[in-house]
Length: 359
Image 1 (cartoon, helix red, strand yellow):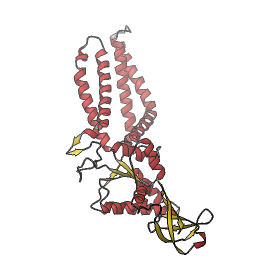
Image 2 (cartoon, helix red, strand yellow):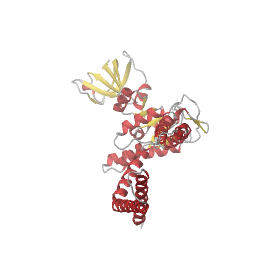
Image 3 (cartoon, one colour):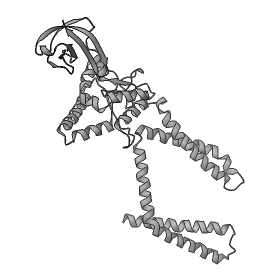
Image 4 (cartoon, rainbow, N blue to C red):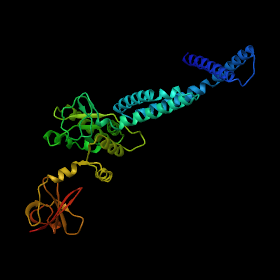
């Protein structure tokens, strides 16, 4: 029924378009026709255009649906905030174009005023959208400062400090789980931003056929539930997306850059890419390494050698915090508690390694 109705409407529009076009040609005086011939010519033109539109209706509908789906896909790439600001900018641009185009409509040259008016509407409408979306962070709405100062853009904010940046969480740091304990200590301030594309990745991992991946994904979802239940922790779900073609890490960096925030991760590769692109990163592993007790060369300690090392005559021991100690000459003392002297300390982004020798 709907298809028939659409066909009738398009056929009617075709008839009206044909009548208008043929009538315009007749008014130009190109053809010398009598009155009855003019009416016949206009009627035939309307019928021909109606038949054309009747035949082409399925293709017109298919093309329209394709364009609408494409337009919908492009719209979904933008956040609700961008759409609202873009719409407001478009309206303001059209109002300015209307005011500017009025003098041009009174020009004596045919069609020139209409052409200039159309160009002004297109240019100023586009300019209004771009300016509104690019400068949205400098606008105050309902007492919410949207400037890139790291303040959350969801409802009324719990914090108005301009030196607090939002922290965008990636998948690895959510699955890791230490973020919950860090937030509870109060050392990490500001809203935690959870992008929806990260949630989708967690859901895919949780639905994986691999038991290990499935457990990791479910652990990540449990961590998110724990974060949301904590009153002291401010969690924001960000719906902004950048299409399915980009990788999650690229989306994370792009989102953090737009929000003026920092990426919270323990992914070493993401840390390097973010550093290259100029996006600030908070690495959980670096934090864990920085709070480990400082060990200096020459210090003595007592430890138990648990296994042999990679090189000959080496033994491996571990401190309570998991720091590995390579003991020269410790291969023969596996299982024994020995006194060692620290010879050197190697600090890397992946962790801290201590070298020692038996006292």
